[in-house]
Structure formats: C-alpha cells, structure tokens
Length: 223
Image 1 (cartoon, rainbow, N blue to C red):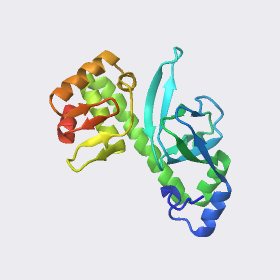
Image 2: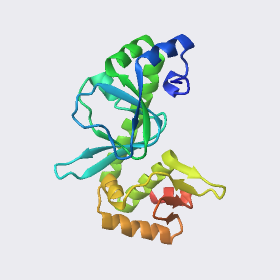
Image 3: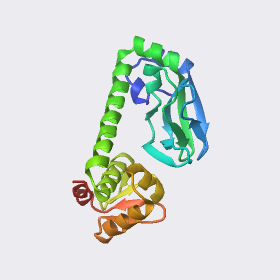
Image 4: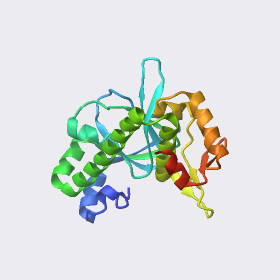
C-alpha cells in the first residue's frame, strides 16, 4: 500500500512508512455496507482511500440522522484513540469504498512516537467540533431556509465539483428526507424551500444531484 499520499503520513520517511504499512490493512466495502455500528467496541480507525461514507445516528424507530459525509483522505472514528470508548456513531458506505484500517492501540502508540500525526488529527477534531457547534447554533437561531442554505453551502465546499460556468455540482446524493433530518425539519419543508431557491435560479435540482448556480447568493440565504 502507498501511504505516502495520505496527508497524515506525508512527513514520514520511507522506513517509517514501511512500519505503518505493517500495521495497516486495506478494506473494501460495497455501497450501503456498514463499516462500523454505533456502540460497537471501538477497535479500528479508518482513513478513506476511495469513495464516500456517511456517519449517522439512529433513533429507536430506525430513523437516520446524518452527522457528516466523508470522502478521500478523511479519517473516521479517530476519537476512540483518545477516549477509548465505543464507536459514537454508525458509518455506512454511500458508494463503493476502500479504507485504510488501523488498530486503535497501534495508532495510539504512533501518536506518541510521531507528534506531527497527533497535531494533524487534533486539527481535524477541532474543525469538526467547530462545525458541530455551528450546527447547534443554526438549529437554535436560524429558520429552516437559512439552515438548508447553510447545509447546501458546506456540502458544495466539501463535495462540490465546479464546471467552466462556475456552477457547483454537489456530488453526494442525499434524499430530501436525509436533508430534512440533517437540519431538523420535515421533508415537505425541505421540498418547498428547494423549489423556492430553485425559482430564484440559485440552484438547479435534478434526480441525481443539486447544482449550485450562484454560491454567493446561496451564502446570503444563510444569514
């Protein structure tokens, strides 16, 4: 496995990369396959090599609340290295996925030996915490249109593909119900807001994706 392209390990020399390679397993998952379940013992940390993964919580009725969408070079379940608890959420492959799998204890030892890796992972945790705090603030202070605009904006930044016309196609296929669950509203409300924003030519909706025609105007709707 070539781990030199993984940002967390980019500063390591060949010998160190070989050592990490010995404790790393490449795992593949089909679309909709479970990578790990919430409350399972947290034994492995994953770094995505290819594909997209959704991380979610489920309630007693089986309803899903998507917390985040991850893609190439994102790290999953890194928190278990620090708190040594069970997995805090469930991870499901959105597409066919290949992940580097590292044992929690081995990775913990690696953090001790290579503080640079620890710093990079802590920056990831910090960024996710800030985003989670923003989501909590949005739920309390913003209306449904602002929350949906904020979600689409961040999905465009993270998973968007820009074309020559500066349109941004969000490359993650989410249902209107999933969008609703992510911002704490109903599918009917999301459908109504999407149609309204589309009517202003800010976005374009198709069966496969959402295209952002004007990212600046979308950002203004977040306010």
